[in-house]
Amino acid sequence: MKKYDYLIVGAGLFGATFAYEANKKGKRCLVIDKRNHIGGNIYCKKIENINVHQYGAHIFHTNNKKVWDYVNSFAEFNGYINSPIASYKGEIYNLPFNMNTFNKLWGVITPEEAKAKIEEQRKASGIIEPKNLEEQAISLVGTDIYTKLIKGYTEKQWGRSATELPSFIIKRLPVRFTYDNNYFNDRYQGIPEGGYNIIIEKMLEEIDVKLSTDFFENREKLSNLAEKIIFTGMIDEFYNYEFGSLEYRSLKFEHEILECDNYQGVAVINYTERDIPYTRVIEHKHFEYGTQNKTVITKEYPIDWKIGDEPYYPVNDEKNNKLFEKYKELASKEKSVVFGGRLGDYKYYDMHQVIEAALKTVNILLESN
Ligand code: FAD
Ligand code: UDP
Image (cartoon, rainbow, N blue to C red; front, side, top):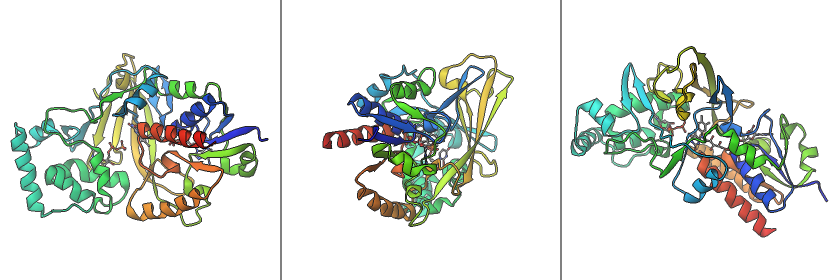
């Protein structure tokens, strides 16, 4: 008999949720991560007594009451509502696209006037059935907003033209004909008081964890420790890129401590023009209504991904989704390896979707045992 039932590769939200649930059901789990900390991309580091989201701003939001109750069983959530603003050539606009944005841009006051303006611009563009992100965006909000708030941001974020990107990416953002700056439509939203680490620490409290351990550096030995592997790293890397590498987008984060108590007056400012190399500036203290004397900001620079870089975003266009299907086919034949999470499933998952997927995987695996 092997020492563990499960070797869980990745101490991110998927791996930690899986480990917590499996342990509760009496399974012996070992979690490994190549990083020197737990939490994956939701990890926070305390700097100047501020919880700094080390890998980009993370706001928890969901419509799923079960998932909301689940995360609330690990941490208290504050009532933070994300209301980022967009900065375009020194002009400031409210996000997501709503009556405040339309009013600032066009001076319109009623929803009817805003809709008429968008319809006029959509008609002039001649788009009937949107086939890509650019066409989808123009159909939803017209050419002015597309030009000022979407095109530049999107093309630097993804490193390709908006005409080569799938429409679903822009549909993540609400378009609203009310004066409401809430970035998400979900019923439940917030930031865990004290940061995200608390959740992962509680999930992994009773679990064996080995950090700074890369699965691929000791593949055979690690695999032999457990009956089954839950793999939350890159699925193409697991198969040694045998059909070629999937594409990802990477990021560079530049953190700075500033000697002022309030730098930008809001947690997130998106810089939507192409010429500014970063997409967002995050001022972390505002996620928790911080009153510290200093502040910490992070500039987020999108960068090309190559093998060895951190794969922050899957690029879910048609070409990559097709390639992923080939890896998925291999995965479906595995008897003792299960893939999950943003990298294992190659899906642009948010946190609530990762939890949902992990709980589903636990149910499937532990019911069939
Ligand atoms: P990860 O957190 O990536 O964890 C995978 C872990 O596996 C990593 O720690 C990695 O080091 C480890 N690993 C990989 N390969 C190996 C290996 N070979 N050996 C050992 N360990 C390995 N979601 C939201 O809901 N709201 C937000 O506001 C939000 N903002 C985001 C902002 C940014 C910039 C990014 C990149 C993501 C954001 N997300 C947000 C998404 C969120 O981060 C993910 O949904 C979630 O963290 C994914 O969890 P995971 O466990 O699948 O993956
Ligand atoms: N987007 C944009 N302008 C903005 C914010 C978002 O054009 O000011 C587009 C961009 O293509 C981005 C997508 O909407 O990749 C999804 O935005 P979201 O904030 O959900 O991105 P994430 O937080 O996942 O990076």
